[in-house]
Length: 300
Length: 171
Image (cartoon, rainbow over all chains, first blue to last red; front, side, top):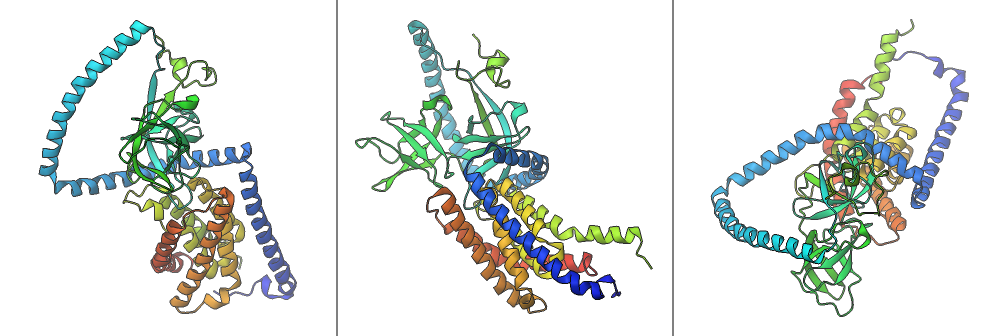
């Protein structure tokens, strides 16, 4: 296959060094570009946000297409694993079901009572919350960021800042929204800050992610009563998240800080609910066409 | 005799294999791999691929290609834009300058070289992220990821070699 070409003649002796120089120059320019991108990204430019959003949007169909069989395979493996202890699990579930039925009766009664009392006092209602269910199509993982990509975007009514729930409780918030995909910032991410409430003592605090599986509970009052096992829910402060959604339990209380064990199992989040939470007069229906203000469902 | 259009087209398409293969691997690793905790420490496939192709077919893994692959990874992972681009460029830069050390040598030499270069790139990435967020990030996950990447390198290198011999023997 070796064929004498133009590059072996005199031209090569001149063109060679020039080509090497051009390659070096390209390399250095690209390095500089990468570093400037990092610096620009730190400055939170709108343009950078656009680039990311468009990128994720373009990749979404591919990710969506291929994540489905992988999810099925994982489900199959889970089912095989579960086969072993079916009987024991059945027994457990029966007991739990009985317990839950009692709870259901209690909660029905409480719900009715609550409604009656609210009506008596003419109390303001919390706005209706409608969930959008979406499939997780990409889990970035990695040591530096904790985010997910879901297959619902602006056209489905997903908006930046909305709360995202897994099967067992809050898992994060919508950070970026594309046309058909959105990125979820998980509670465990370094940049996540969520206002929370300790359910028993009613103390307010901020849940701060630090890239570990157990986020920190910060800004508790110095005399706060907190012990492992306390339930932690969203406080609804700031008006972005609906109040009272479960997040997890306090896992450890030490000098270094209070940590939280989330209800969500970070390894198996397959479907999530994005909550369309619309605070009256805080979000404008014309800017939030996907929200309930427009749909008329929230009106009573 | 001038090579025909079909021949040149064939060569061109074959030439895109390393870049496209890397892109595919990046996308695949980004998918949810539900095995407990695996997603968190998925191997750095892009680093392996860029290193391998820079050593064996540098003209098919030119700096602009490496840069774009890094950007794609940044966008998908949600890391600061430019972070992986920089890391991959560092790997390709060092690998390119040390090519003579690796080409035609025993595989173990490649493996050791990759270990050093990849280790350096991961360290650099970690430092950059710590600087970016102005906090000390726990390096444990990074180190586990590095270890997995290094351990899996022979497997991926064997796969790349298969691809190279099947598709790129003459290029």
